[in-house]
Image 1 (cartoon, rainbow, N blue to C red):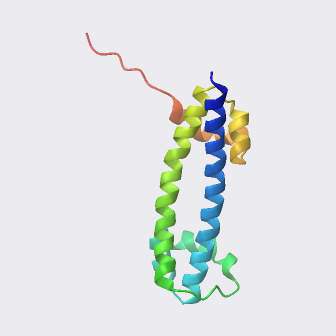
Image 2 (cartoon, rainbow, N blue to C red):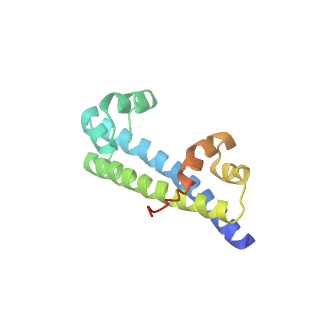
Length: 138
């Protein structure tokens, strides 16, 4: 077990956690801008990659006050970019968790970097880290 590799993996997990928080803030701002220009929830939901009722449920109450003025097309482009960034972060996070576990990090250490509870992190990642050995037919 190399401590520096473990620390590097844990630092990556922490950075991903921070990036997710930043993306969440950008997402709210972009939805707010789009709604300020009366962009339909259907169009916003499409850009978010979710069903319209889910988009309304997630953002409707948060946007009780008028949003920032801005370009609605840029807001929708930002929402599409955020979705892509989230997908990349999910892949990177899985690799970072695998590296951290490989180099001796405990689930508690990983959960602390993610700002989550240990059992939730284990449920999310342990099944994805299990390797399957296939025995060839003889």
